Image 1 (cartoon, helix red, strand yellow):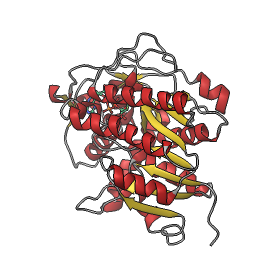
Image 2 (spheres, rainbow, N blue to C red; image 1 turned 90 degrees about the horizontal axis):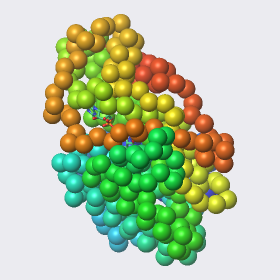
Image 3 (cartoon, rainbow, N blue to C red; image 1 turned 45 degrees about the vertical axis):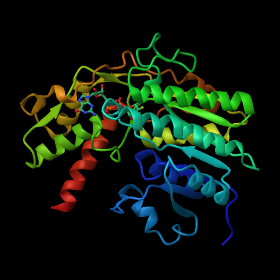
Length: 332
Ligand code: G4F
């Protein structure tokens, strides 16, 4: 079989974004390599359908054991794979949890990016590098909506680590001429979102209550607002960044915010139940500090790369709740 010329290496391939990105790249005829951490269970549910595909796995899709703290292994994988594009998506991505485990969050999110940039810098052939930055770098944002030029004022250990990695990516681009892009992504959701993020928690909770599997849903701050888009759509933006002739930073957002309360309201409307009866508050899920006014302006990526968000908030909520209902019904 003739190997395709485009070779992508993805850290975080088993996550929400990694799985959608793999599907996208495989459709575009890439050879895709993913770095996976060794764990005691081999559950990689988001890419299991790709792994079971005999036409793909071992032919155009490969997985390698590696850890973001292990430079020698990362260096070996990158040398062997010799990627034309690298998508660095891995790392502890839960903002609330970063207050509990700040040191490992900064190590995985900040230092690991530095490690990869150093390895990429030493490669004999150029590697286009995508860094998964985050809206959390703006934190207590000084302007709204935020653009690529908005000052970084993170409000969480996670935001600080992402700010560090984002600035490093800029430094490596400017100092060494590396093709490095920061995708400054706002919240992006899907049925593959981790269960401890609020949208999936709500979608799952509403579906389980509707099917009499649970009788309450316990949440933190209902007044928090976020700019929520669709993950499937946001991985397209990642790919577009690496296809452009020059490397740059791009905000990827819908430009619209909704509160957690609005998400709850819309999710329970899908299952036809009054949410006030089931949703409880526990301050355990509140954060010591929250970013404020987080809403992105995606004008630059729209004009330069032709990207625009697909779908709307109501469709996103419906898609997530219906996926939860279908999953429950398929098990019963
Ligand atoms: O779903 P969340 O945990 O996402 P958060 O903190 O906005 O972070 C996500 O988006 C960032 C980009 O903007 C990424 F960088 C990051 O990696 C991640 O993907 O929380 C959303 C909001 C917060 O204000 C939180 O306080 O929902 C509020 N919330 C209320 N109750 C809750 C809950 N969040 C969680 N996780 N669980 C709750 O019960």
